[in-house]
Amino acid sequence: MSLISRISRALVLAPHPDDEILGCGGTISRIASGEGSVTVAVVTRGQPPHFDSAQADHVRLEAERAHSLLGVSSTRFLDLPAAALDQMPLADLNRAIGEVVSDVRPDTLFVPFVGDLHFDHRLVFEAAMVAARPRGNDYPVRILAYETVSETNWSAPMLSQSFQPNVFIDISDHLEAKLDAFACFASQLRPFPDERSLETLRALGLVRGSTVTRSAAEAFMLIREVS
Picture (cartoon, rainbow, N blue to C red):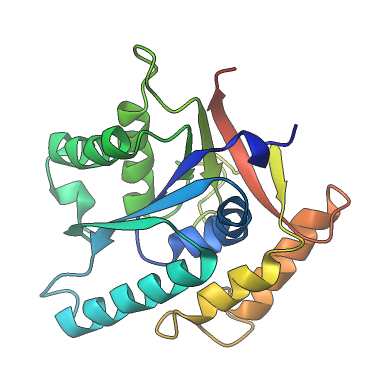
């Protein structure tokens, strides 16, 4: 039995709009095309004075279009301040993440990698671990950390944990869906050789796939699984 077939209800935590596509867009598509459901929770929103409100509205529309293409069942926008999670009480962040996890009740939780360069990613990971504590009988039995180009790969290896994937999900039939979804983010898309380009995402999918003899794959670190 494949990992995907064991996922009935997945929750993807995205610190910012597009992280969910960069990290696990193909996996989202594969789960949604089968018998599983996927909820995406976008944790932050760009807020004045550092971000333009109209631009934030536009990015939200891009996310909704991308999620529709992938078959996402539900999208939650938590609207916490982007690039400022470290300035809010951790109890408030933990509560916001905890409420989503409690409401969705996922069996599988996808989270950003704790060693990512952006501190929003690190704080969302830590809040997710608080929310997913294995207490009682109702908690995510599976937690997977995904990689985000330009965040996961740029932390200093001597200062932060390095991303060492031990789970690979075959997205051979879903790589194009991932690329189409990321193309919805016109405001975030960059021309190659920028990392946030369609060419880079395709190349990463091919490389991750080739390491496990698949045409394309997404890589994850298994944080915990209860079976």
